[in-house]
Length: 604
Image (tube, rainbow, N blue to C red; front, side):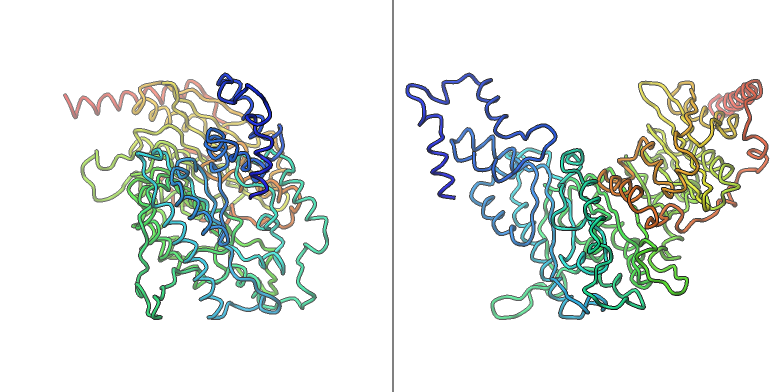
């Protein structure tokens, strides 16, 4: 550090020019000069340490440079104490932070331990690392004061992994320490993450590398990589006695406004511990993106599903307005199955039963929502239409503005019919419970060998206009008359406007959809940023390009057929190519007459 300061004293403008000072320059010139120093060349990554050294030039440079260098931070166990000291010396730096990534690095492990469950000593060690990281970060961030630091707060990304996770059997390049990006806005910078994957995929030692050991027989390597869900470990005082033995106390940290847990990191926080963080620390959380891998151990998955219902959902803060929940199955190529086994690919039956009702209840207080894909979408929509106890109509109205729903399509032959029925049911739910609806998007794919189908339906209310867009692998809007009539009523009832429609076929072919397991249509979703973290979406695109055989099929996991939808089959069968405008106009007129008669009956 001393050498850097001396160098900067030599290069300082005040020491190299006579009768000339930095303060005498116009503000515009000073800002332009600083932008040359701070901002990287177009399309290239910025070297943080090289930028940070310019903070020693003068106070003005320090404030501007620190505003840039502190706006996005990546912390791990080795840097948390230094971060606490830096903020402790000048807590105004908390006001510069916009995004913070806490990388919890767990203990390393060697062969043959990679094929064995974590022992008690390893679990304790990992829990202590996790607890120390969490408590250290929260103790620092709790110094935030909105009056002094600004009210916008930060987005916290939380990841947990061991450096050894990529040294044995897992060829997930995106969790390596040298992965060349930090945040979504870095995705287009060079070197790109696509180049990184290409380089690692071409290296034979990175493909299921395992120190010369024999292949496991019972998928123990998957269990080791997922590990044991982490708990907050009780602490000991100077006398060796436990402090807060039964429940670790956590400070309230209203600075954290957004929370991201991404798909690529398999290890997870115990659901009870995550609930504690949400209830005690993340008290002002406004949005939460939770991408989780389904547990390979069915009992562990059942434990999560029960805890999710009984602990996590009740602990969500009242400030929460946006929630995205996705659970991903373990790719089949990572599982060495000698017999057919669905472990790591399904949620529990308990979760299948409670998810529709719990998600419908939760949606009442959210504005933006992406519920779990494994949820029965038809049942979810039914609960929105008939929520149950509340008799007051105002209590049954939702604040939901944007929602995206995956539609299970288990049968290729009937996929179009099933999708239409869900679109019509969604219209009834929107009419009944969603007066503030701005965008509703439904999507579904079905892949059977080299055959496939894919659909997207979108309702938009924007600039006092309502419209629907239908996308599929053909230039046809299925059951056009029925769909237009149902959604036209939504537009009239909630927005007092007429409905326009458009048909936009996918540019991809059936073969494209089949090869990508349906992932190629993600780019066409208007609400794709609500469904996927941008980095997750980029990973899916890379996997589809480089490793098509390794793609799992998360889009069709836990599919339930919507055969019990309360819609007469005659409403759809034979109507898939219905373009009869006269029939549509007659039906709309009939619906309008019935609505007018009902209003007169109720209100005179």
